[in-house]
Structure formats: C-alpha cells, structure tokens
Length: 223
Image: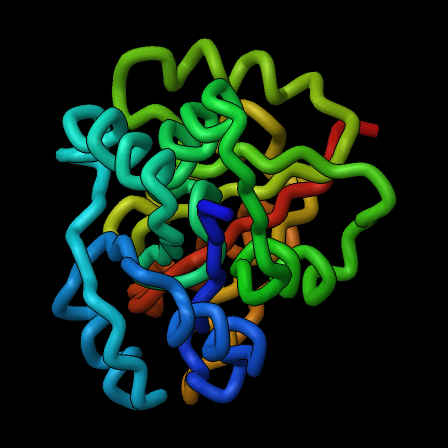
C-alpha cells in the first residue's frame, strides 16, 4: 500500500537518529528533503541510497498534486526536514493534509524535535503548554504579543540568533521584566546551553554575549 512517512531527523547529534527511521528511509521509494544538500550528508552517513527529491516551503504548493498522484500509484514516500520533525515549523503540513483528503495512509515516526527538550530543560510548568513557533516578523507581531500576554500556559517559541534580542525586549515590554524565561541554544550539539532567569536577566546575558545557533525560548504563562 502507498504511504507517506514523516521521518524526524537529528537536530544536531547524529546519534539521535533512530533505527526505525534509518530502516524506513532505506525501504521507501522516494525521500522528500527540505534541502537535498543537507540531507545528502545525513543519508550518506547512514548509508541510505534512496532517491531524493527537493520539497521545501517555496515549492510545496506546486508539487503537492504530483506527489499525491505518485502516492496513489503505489509509491511509498518519506518526508524529512533539515532537522527535527517535519511539519513542526517546517514543510509537511500541506502534503499531510492532502494525503488525508485523498485517503492515503500517513505515519509519523517519533523522534527528535527541539521544543520538547527545551521545555523540559526550562524547569517551567510543562503539564500545559502552547507551541507558538516563530512570531510574526512585522505584520501582526504586536497583536500576537498582546494576546499572548494573557496566556496562562507555558509558551514555546523558535527564534533566530539575530532576532533574539528584539524578541526578548518585546517579552520584557509585553509580558513584564520579571516574567520567567528560559533560552535553550544548540540543543544536542557540542556547545548546548540553557540560560534561565527573568526576561530582563536573560536579555542582559545575551546583550553581552551575542548568541549563535538554533534557539528555543520557553516563557512562563501569566499567573
């Protein structure tokens, strides 16, 4: 039977690749990769020789219909992103939705995703939380921050290094300078670190030490 597999890949440490993920990637007919150059290194490391095709945010709208036809014809496809779980702030949602609409089986393997270890590392309440991904860059940013200022659940954000200071400054302004914040950087990699404190304290830390690498911000909800 045709099937779409969503296969998580390591967010840094290659040892986090699961045996099942390797097996699936070797057995499918086609791998869809966000960046074939990045994924090519991963596949080579694990001796995976399956055909690969580019599938990213700039072409996924155009390729969904053709991929659905491939799946209907009996092709088995695995979707991977550059790092982590597909469809979590990465391509994957559109194709998954189309598969469900066309009664094509979809199976997501468990595996690496950045926000879970960041949430656990933070020490903030994790029984109820909301994943916000990336905040709007310009349009809608202020409106979103005003809404989230009233959120009582722990909030999780992704951010790029060059926008971290701006985002932490926004948190001080909209959530309050004393709001507990945790920033995890370079998770699973050699220079992994988690800095926790009030919004002001964490902002001061990174103002004096410009960050590098992939970043996850965890913010306590409103009391």
